[in-house]
Amino acid sequence: SQELEQSPQSLIVQEGKNLTINCTSSKTLYGLYWYKQKYGEGLIFLMMLQKGGEEKSHEKITAKLDEKKQQSSLHITASQPSHAGIYLCGAYTGNQFYFGTGTSLTVIP
Amino acid sequence: DTEVTQTPKHLVMGMTNKKSLKCEQHMGHRAMYWYKQKAKKPPELMFVYSYEKLSINESVPSRFSPECPNSSLLNLHLHALQPEDSALYLCASSQELAGSPNTQYFGPGTRLTVL
Figure 1 (cartoon, each protein chain N blue to C red):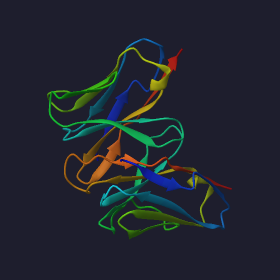
Figure 2 (cartoon, chains in turn red, cyan):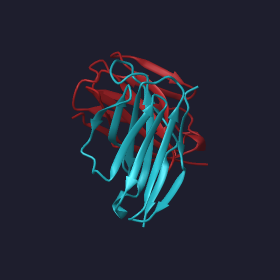
Figure 3 (cartoon, rainbow over the protein chains, first blue to last red):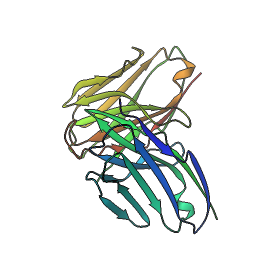
């Protein structure tokens, strides 16, 4: 099975600060998905990375997939309270989708 | 439009009750998924339907019974549940089961409490 380890497990930052969340795979990634979840709610798709070295941005969130395709990072610039939630990476192994261990982000106003 | 809807939003049931969760999407997606999520854990895959046929069953107890009446609808029938089945149940859909990219879009979930 695919093992996706996220770090840190939780993060508390002051509003306006930058932060990075990492997702490390035990196997080569052929597609890496990032989602955000507010507590008790559904998952919101953020972005998907496929190629080694690929980088995508949406508003203040940037995600990268490293050249070896075994690690992805999610970077938030100038964090806001609206960024708070749980960030999950995910990937397929065959037809089965596995989520990472999750990172809980708290942004203090 | 990437909307997946789920009803009900909340459900409280006794161990002897029979209830159903409903999921709907109108994106023309041919793969639909049920996940179970316990507090502070990532979602865990339960079932996957592809073209209205059950493709993956992750060794889920028979008290959970999925059904895909048509390409837009996915149901999860519940019977004789246990308190440990209390969780957030998430539905998702994607264009196909295989292929890349294959982004799954999630519904808001049903919060289930079993008394």
